[in-house]
Every structure is written in C-alpha cells, then in structure tokens.
Image (cartoon, rainbow, N blue to C red; front, top):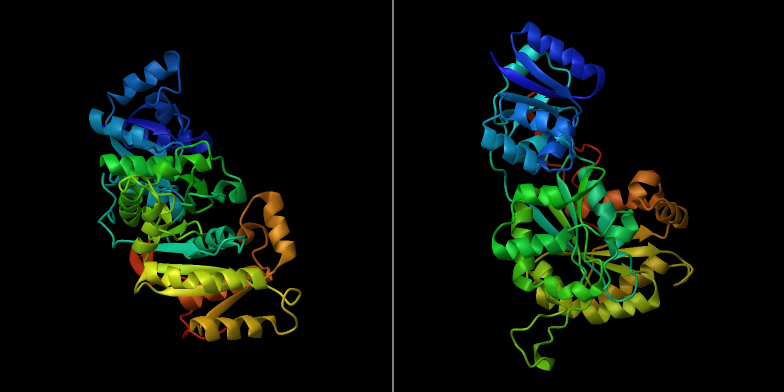
Length: 420
C-alpha cells in the first residue's frame, strides 16, 4: 500500500484523494499546492508545517501541481533525502518542461488515480537534450531599441514551444526589468555568474533564480551599474555554458561599448567594464545587431560595426533596422539606410522593424512585451518575419500528447534570406 500526500488545490485535490483510496493507496494529507514547498523552505510556521514535514518523511509518493511556486528545487531535494517519489500534474508545456528539468514523474492533470500510481519516477523524455543556442543582441550607443528587440525575440521564439531564457548582461545601463515590469531585487544573472565561478551553478538553480515572463524565463541584470565587476569574463562564460543545457535559446542583451581597456588600466588582471559584452559576443551562435533608422544611430553603427565584426569573428551577424519611419530620413528611408550600410559596410541583408508608436506606447504603459499587448501590430508582424527568415526555422519538438515528435510553428516557414 502506497502512502500519498496530495498537493492539489480545490475540488480536484479532494476528488483525486478519493480515487487514490479506491485504488488502495493511503492518502495521508490533502494540502494546497504550495504548502510542501513552503514548509521545506521554512516559509511556513506552526503545527501545520510540522505535521506536513512529518508526513512527508513517512509517505512514498507526493502528487503536486507542476507550478514554479509548488515544484521547487528545495522540495525536490527534500523528497530525495526522504526517498519520496514526486508526480507532477501538468496541464501546459511549460509545466512539463519544469517537471522534466527536475527529473520527476509527469502526470496529466486529468489522469485517473491508477495511471498516476503507475507513473515512473523519472520523466520518460528526461534524456539530455542538445546544447542550446546563445543569441546576443547588440546595438550602438544611444537607444536603437536592442532591449525591446531582445524581449520580443524571446517571446516570438517561445511562441513555438521552445524553452527560452532572456538574460540582461548589460554592464552599463541594464533595463530588462524596467521594460518587462519585473522586480530587479532578486539574484538574476549576477548570482548565476557568481555560482558559475564556484562551480555550483546547475540547471535547477537557474530555474530557481529565474523570473517567469509568460513562457520565457528571465535573468534580470544588476540593479545598480556599480555592480558591473560581478560580470567578469570567466563568470559570464561559465554561466552561459550552463544556460545552454537549461534552455533551447538564450537571448542575451549586452551593452554597446566594445573597447578592451587593458592599455589604460595598470592592473592587467583587474575587472573590465566591457568584459560581459565581449564574453557574450565571443560565445554567441548568432548576433543580432540593432540600428535605429535615424542619421545619428546609423553613423554610430557604421563606426562600431568593424569592432563588432572583429569580436564576432565567424559568428553570423543579422542586421535589424529598428524604428523605421519616413520622418527622420525622408520618403525613401529604407532605401537610404540600405544603400548606406551596403556602401560603407558591405551589408546587403537587412530586416526592418517599423516605428509602431501605438504598440510601443501600449507595451510601455503595461510594462509588458508588445507580443502580449499588441500581438497583431505591424511591429509584431515584422519581427515574426525576421525571426522566421533569419533566426529560427521551424524545429522538431516533442508532442507530449501523442508521444512522438512533430513539426511546430507552421506559420514561420523557412524562407531564403533576402533584403527587406
């Protein structure tokens, strides 16, 4: 006879407990989904916490809803110490990814008690996956919109079922938390870098310190620019290495300066302000270079592109012209930008994102991605085209309902590169 704790909310939890007892299981407790995690993390006090921890040490199985607040690294570690199996009830793809990451059993939210009791401890598809990509988003000084492009790029990639992380590695003016309305007091990318230096950074730890933005996991940047020494080159490289095992695509927003300042610093082993940017660009599989469609930004981009290519080496660079409009450059704004970059830089493949004031203002007002507040806007359509042509052809992801691989993202067919 199996002793079980059911951590499922409401009527479903009580009904599942009744079904388990009919199957011969002994249900010791029916609690709210987040109570086991809170008790293990000492966030829950009183006799209820003591009773729950005591029962957790005696049961054989914990059935819990697969949410970030209820399925945590601390809870999994405690159950491992007690020898308790965990079955995570999953309804969405992001919940299944969370369960697979922790290596616990996956049960469908509407499954019957018999099938849940027969669910194996380790998820069937928990085998190590291929290493993910690092996609860096860079732009010249000023405000070409690289943070906004990084956010929307991450949301678009996640729309097809990929596991995506959004990372703020800007050591000069981090703004990811401000744009997305997330708190920046948490650990974020700096904490991941510190743990990477000590060799203690794991996939589970990244999931713990990340903040969800819809289906995207976000590692916010340093909350004060003065903390830039925490983002050293070796730390950043180590953190990105673990990120490749964590998600399919890691979108990294970096600062604009590319200077290597060893010549003006007496301590050659000291920290470098631009080390994070240079490390990300060196590790990236694809670099998105963002330039705004105005004379100042184009001029700065022309001057900085040579340095970018020197740092990037053979890494592919996709050039995106953001805030495209006629007001700053005249009637043929796109043609002027295209001819300028082709003449001075030899760049002949460009993608244009329009200056969609209504969508941008709505996103700023809501502190949310444009994809969530204006998914049918001209900006979203142009970005979707850019992603489909230059960044992400449709990929094979696991169809958990049918147990086979299927092609996702039919709306983004692979298209040969061409000038926009």
